[in-house]
Length: 438
Image 1 (cartoon, rainbow, N blue to C red):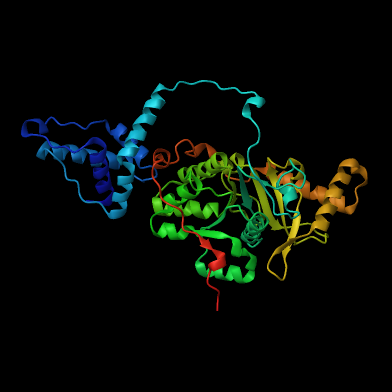
Image 2 (image 1 turned 135 degrees about the horizontal axis):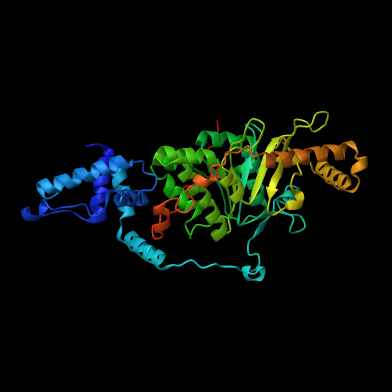
C-alpha cells in the first residue's frame, strides 16, 4: 500500500472514527460523506499535502469495499513523521478549537464596518535608530527618521550588491544603539562555517543572534520554527531579518509538499501577523533580476510596508557610477525620502560607512530641481534622472502578478487552529560565541 493511501486511511479513521460492523450491517455500509466533501475535508485538515481528487476517490472506495466485505478496513502503521503530523492535527484541543471556529463561522453574518480616522487610534509602535544617516530614509514622521516597528520591508537587489552584508551590519548597529532590543537574523542558506567567516570580516556582528532555518528543515520542523519565531505570543522579537524569503519558500515546498501559491500566502500572512500583532519590524530579502528589478508576486510587493533596493548605482559620467547604494522605491513611513540613495562601503574595521556628504548633496540637488527645473545643474539632473528611473521601474510591472491565485485566507489550517501548541524557543546562535576560524 502506497504512502499516500496509508496517510489517507489513518486520517479517515481519526476523522470519522473506527468502523467495526456486525455481519448483518456491513453490506449496507456507505461512506460518511460524499467523495467531494471527503476530499475537501482532507485538504482542509492537511493543507499543502499533495493528493488528487481521483486518488481520494480511489482510497475512499477501497475503504468502502473492505468494510462491505469484512466489516472493517485495514489501518496500516504510519511513518513516524506523518504520525506526528496527524497527532498534532487531531489532538483534542485542536478538535475543540476547530468545532468552535466552524460554529462561529456559521453564525457570523456580513457587517459593513466603516470607521472614522479618529476611531483607529494613535500610533503605538516603537521607533528604532542606528544613530547614523541611514535612519533618515527609513521614515520621515520624526526628525532624524528611524525604523518603525509593525512594518514589513521587502529588500531586493542584484546578486553581489550586498543585501546580506547591509542588513547584518544594520541589525548590529540597531543592537549597539539600543542594547535592550531583541533582534534575530534568520538565515536560510548559511552554515556555521559561513558565520565564522562573516565574524572574521565583520567582528561587530558578535551582538547578533542568528537562527539557521536549515537545522529545522532537516529535523522536519520548519513550519514549527517559523510559527514560533513570528507567531508565538510569548516570543517577542523587535527586529527580524529574513534572508531570504524566496529560499524559505522553496524549503517549505520541498519539505512539506506545499504549492507555491499556498506557501507564499502563508509566509506573507505570517510576517504581516507578526508586524500587526507583535509590533515587529521585519526585513525580508527577495530575489531580483540582474538589473536589480524586483521579480515576484505583486501580493508580496503591495501588501508589505516598504520596498528597499540595494544595488550598484548606475549613472554614466557620474562619480558615483558603480558605487553600492540603498534607497526605497516605496515607503509608507517615508514618502518624502523615497528614491533618495545613500552610498555605502566597508571600512577597515568591517563596518559599513555611509556617505553622508553625498547624501546631503543629493538632498540639496533634489530641492533645487523642484525649485528651478529650467536651470538644473549636473548634480540636480543626476538626481532627477535617478528619481525618474525609480518611478518608471515601479510602474513597469515587471513582476509576475499571481496575487489572485494566492491562498491568503487560509494559508494553513494547523497554524490557525493550534494556539495551544508550544514549540519552545528557536535555537539561536550568538555570534559572540561562534568558534573562531583557525
